[in-house]
Image 1 (cartoon, protein in one colour):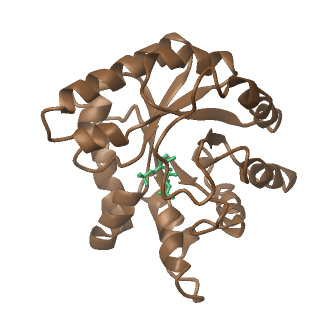
Image 2: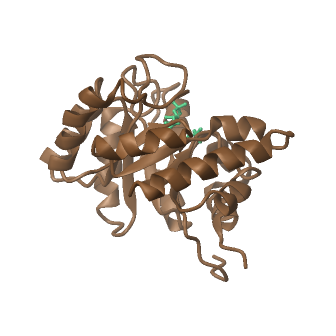
Length: 257
Ligand SMILES: CC(=O)[C@@H](O)[C@H](O)COP(=O)(O)O
Ligand SMILES: NCC(=O)COP(=O)(O)O
């Protein structure tokens, strides 16, 4: 692995799409835990999953298996995403009851059966109902990140409701990458990240990040602690293999002088 320049942003590999392929047969391949091991061996900082209520990809047993696996990888993080009003809280409470590790929950306001995540929480509308669930996650010892649109004015409200971090929903940036609108999107995300940092929040980012758009994002958006990347990374891994793919994404995250 190239260690010439450090990374300031952790890479968490989202394994949803490995499970999606696995679930089309009853053979257990491709293996989600094997994918996790190969990504962690290649230097990934953590693993992300988003067990949806319809179990189309990640299932509860995958979450338990991955948590058990991460016990053998100290310093690597397990991030579980989902809607806390659906299945997420029972899922992570079950892990903690089994004394299995989970480091971060990312609350995402998806509907049941939603095609993919496409928006963040709304403030003040969601504040009152989120507060008790954030407190519940904290009582389980979990860091709480809220999936948010890149709206600077919403960041203080996310802090006020008790969040530790926000995950900026990056699809609008990814859609604008390589178009005349790219610069404006980067400015918008940089402003949102600055507002989050000023409010005392950590900043994560994710959705449709890829090997083309990732480097510019982390170079121009300040203070990004973690990116979670799944769809494009797993697509790349089909061509390059997990190890070369993870190393390529880490290269995008390296701090260039
Ligand atoms: C929250 C987010 O942007 C992604 O994690 C999303 O969860 C991906 O989910 P799918 O893999 O089901 O599209
Ligand atoms: N939180 C975003 C994530 O985990 C992966 O999103 P994507 O790369 O699959 O779009």
